[in-house]
Length: 388
Image (cartoon, rainbow, N blue to C red):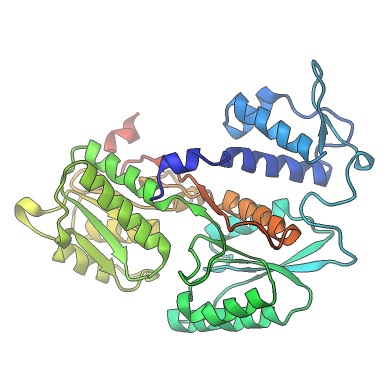
């Protein structure tokens, strides 16, 4: 089970993230060689982390020969001649090689754009070029088919050094994934775990823990009949969020009413008709829900529109929570209580993990990196927040 204790047993994701950002700044010259690194206090304030996290970041930078540390002196950025003859990420190569990124949805979505930003922020562009591709097919079936086609094409690319995959095809993509494995192409999966038959490195968030926290927040507000609007996607993320919801109810001693669990057939739709139908199918009377936890922000916002169309006051008559944190990229104030996925950090972590696999292709176990998705409470579950 993915719980907070599992996260805490790993190296802090905060250390990984801050180290990656500072390393990129050193590589770009923003922090010039021979100059002082910003003071620990300044770094702690910028990234909203503790001084202990900053000390660990400095140790990691020193281990990579990016800074010089000495007692009673401020940390200094190392010069190029002081560093080993290798890049921050990846081994030196005679020409630029390709890293592939298969991502869903495409980069016009802010969340996926943030992942690309995180990768580009950490990538050594003198040695590698990033090729970003995603499905543009009109249906989910066609999108999964295009994923398999892309993976097979990548398996024949002689310049390909590794792939980061936000896979949607599941077992349908398994033959292509096995071909890539036979050709020794390093792979890192993000957001969605690989098919069960295919072990690989993975970077994502602890969906179960975050869903547990959201449901626990709703329980703390006094709600005892909480609906969960999921979808029919077989992705690991969907199942993990369902597990977190169920675990929170069980821990609180709340009976899990199967009639309070509904599934959207078309999670990408912008229409409210399906949401209105699901809401109409929820129990009435004493079993009627007073709160809804949706599998994604997109689903939650659709549900909120459907509720308002029925003159239901969101936050007052019905509490609604989502998952992802997409309102941070929208104009206006945030209204939806949600788990904010650190998409940029997912990109950074995925690239770092891929580079480690490129440097050491054999001999190390596959790694799961789980980041926290902090809960942001807004007026959709706690109206008095707007008056604070």
